[in-house]
Length: 126
Image (cartoon, rainbow, N blue to C red; front, top):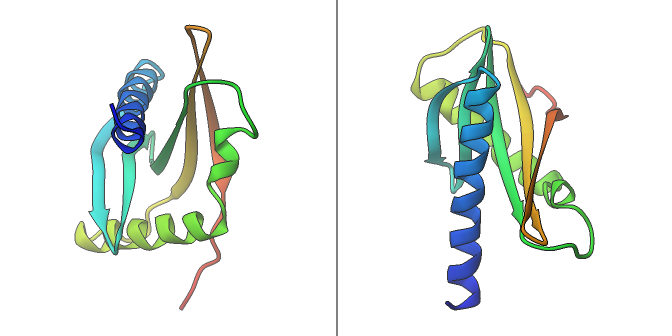
């Protein structure tokens, strides 16, 4: 398997693990892989009255830096634009939202899931 194909496969595997984890934690899955504005939100879930946009990061082995650090300001802004489109498309107004990151890592055959609630905030724009 070529490197690009491997990363795509690993990412999909991580998303499946994240969905299973979120379901076990009582979240309601609304959508997977929502695409708009040249971007994607991996998972959209409900946590009580809060709409949560979830970015999934997957890592196969220990290396430099944690995957949660891969959600830089540029990526945060891109996720924010896609989230705004999601809200517009569904005519959702005055809804509490947050941005989470779920990190799925595999090291020596052991799976570890780390859920970072309120991983980042975006400034409101007029």
